[in-house]
Length: 97
Image: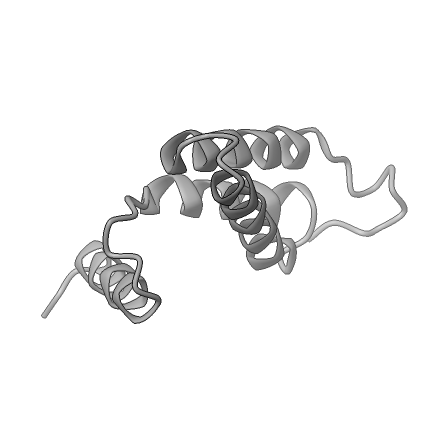
């Protein structure tokens, strides 16, 4: 039986292949860590939303030639991580989980 890490890496490769992005390097652990920060600092549903928006922002930055794929992803993850870590759900009027 495969471990969770092996399954995630295999799934990541399958997704990249399906989108013809085999040359893109994805730091699965960094993305999962960002999802964890968003889920715990904002609300649980913020995890997929945050990772999607960070990936979209990275894609836009990379696609415009503003930065390399790796630099775009690193920057987008850093912005989202900082924003999520600093977010106070109760101050925003949203009950935390």
